[in-house]
Length: 63
Image 1 (tube, helix red, strand yellow):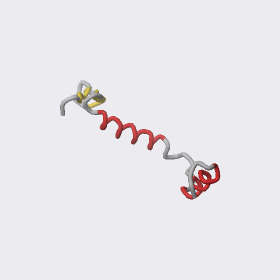
Image 2 (tube, rainbow, N blue to C red):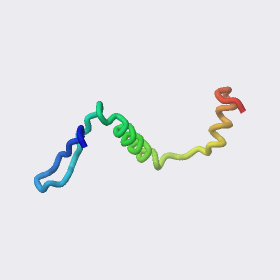
Image 3 (cartoon, rainbow, N blue to C red):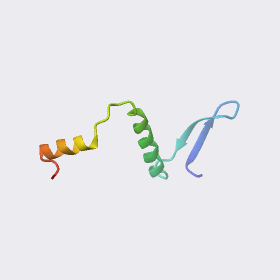
Image 4 (tube, one colour):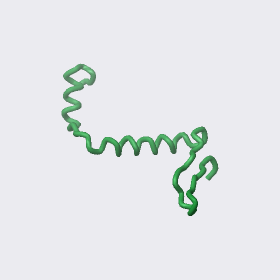
C-alpha cells in the first residue's frame, strides 16, 4: 500500500507506522475514532432518552 511505511525493530517486528495523511485521510479518521472510543469506554453512560429529554427541555430539539 503506497503512503504507508512500517518501522521495524532489529528482529524485523513492526513497531510503528508512518501514514501519509494526504493520501489516507479517511484511514486516519477511522483510526482516530477507534482511539477516542476506546479512551472513553469506562466513562459513565447517559441513556439516550434522557439526553433527548434534556435537549427538548433546553429548546435545542423539538419534541
